[in-house]
Each structure stands twice: as structure tokens, then as C-alpha cells.
Image (tube, rainbow, N blue to C red; front, side, top):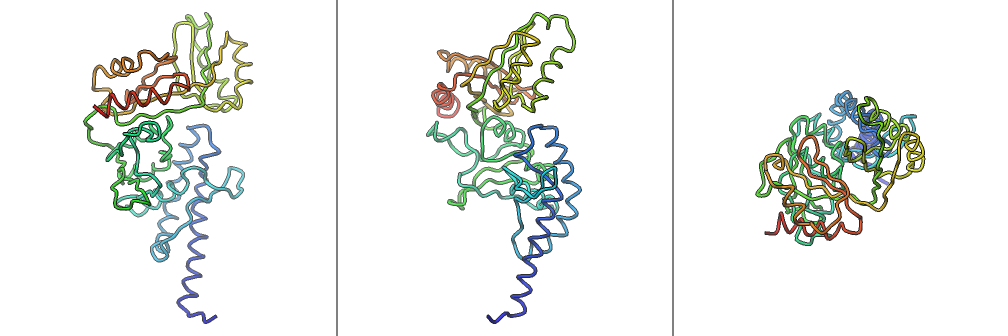
Length: 330
């Protein structure tokens, strides 16, 4: 084989770029799949800022070869592993932050973020622009296009993220920004999460007793099981969990504190939009639309950016279709 000097140089440079990019990922040591504690994930993301200098050094080689590893990282024990869901997106956002790029493009097999799952609501349409907070809420409650924490390095620097379809490159897709203009409807999108369980804890010990909730949530922390939704009354607490692995142990420990009831085959439906908090009557429209469906829990986030409720899993498809017709097809 006749190896020209420039070909040899290109191969050496490509190999060096791969190793250097691999080193950046290893340095960050970010592993979405292995982290269940959101606070710890946030800590790891903060550590990524110290990797920006390394990323900037790698950019010179990235610009020449056009390719960098995007999914290799390290576990807490130092073993080489994949970063998990969103690893390549995170690497792209990290490079964008180092370069002060104009935008980050994430190429997927869908037209962007949608007003609902098109497999459930056939009339669902792409969302042109969405805020980072809205995208985060949707991803947390079931929309799987992006893992929002992976975009943090870009969003923190005001760099927009564009989600585009590799099969339809001319389609504009969805642009995720730090903030987004109001849409025609206060609801930006509808998401859902199946396969959850509700845990109801009832005890009169809650009355006038400080520290009971801390004791209760320490049980979930002990078994590294995050809680999605929480509702409380004077003598009861209801929570939802989507990781059922340690549910038997959690129930056992909770029963030492109170009466416990676990409900399986549940689902969360979540309506997200930054304008929800400014629009009266949203809850009335939601629950009037599904008035014949048994609602088991209701919650509105502290940001008042979402309205979420729990129903039987078997009712999800019909509920999402009805709500999409109410907010997007009129």
C-alpha cells in the first residue's frame, strides 16, 4: 500500500483526536444511567466546567478531523464505560460551550419535540421553539427525545440546541432556548410515564409532629429510589415511583411507621407550558375533558409550569388523545 505522508498524518491525527476526546469524556466521568440521585448528577455536571479547558484544546483537532468520541466515560470506580442515555448529546454541548458556538444540532429519527406522542395522538405536531425548563419537565415525565441535563453546558451559555430529523434534514425541527415565546395555547406539550406505582402512607403521627416527612423520605433515599410526585394531607402522604426494584423493602420499612398501600399499573400524565401559571382555568379544562376517568393523584409543580395527575395505566391513551384534542386541535 502506498502511504502518502498526508494520509499517515491524517490517521495519526485522527487517532490522537479519538484518544483526546476519550480523555475528555473520562475526565468528566458523567454516567447518566448509573446515577439515580439528581443532586449527584448535578454535582457531576458542575464538575464538567473544569473539563472545558481540555475540550478547547481538543477543538483544534476536532476542527480538522470533524469527529470526536461522544459516548465513552468512566464509572465512579474508574472503569471505562459508556456514558448512558444522552452521552453524545452531552459531549456536543460541552464542545459547544468551549467554542462559544452559535448552536448545537442534535440529529435524531424524529422531527423534534412534539405536542404529544404521535403514536397516541396522530394529530400531534412538532414544537418550533421550547424553553429549557419546559423541555426538562417533558423529559422528566416521559418525553424521550433528549435527556435535559446533558444540554446544560450549552444552555448555561445561552447557546440554542436544535433537534432535527436525520431523515428529513430540511425540516426545521425544534429549537430549545433558555426562554421561549408564548404559544397560542398555554400548554406546550403533553407527556406521560407508564409503569409507575403509587405509595400511600397514612398515620395520625403526622399531626403536629415535625420531622415525620424527613423520616419517610429517608426510607426512599436508603434504597436509592427517587420519587416523582408527592401529595400530602393532614394524616397522609402519597408518592409515585417509577423504579420498582426495591419497592418490597421500601414497603417493609414504611410499615414500621404507618399503614401503607401500594398501587401498581399506574401512569402519570403531565401537561407542560410556561404560560400555565398565568392562565386561569387550565385545571378546569383538563379535568372537565376527562371527567369520567378516575384520577388518583393531582399535583402542580412549584414552578407552576406543569399540571400532573395519576391515573390507571389502561386509561393513558384515551386521556392523552382527549387532552390533545382539547388544547391543540380546536
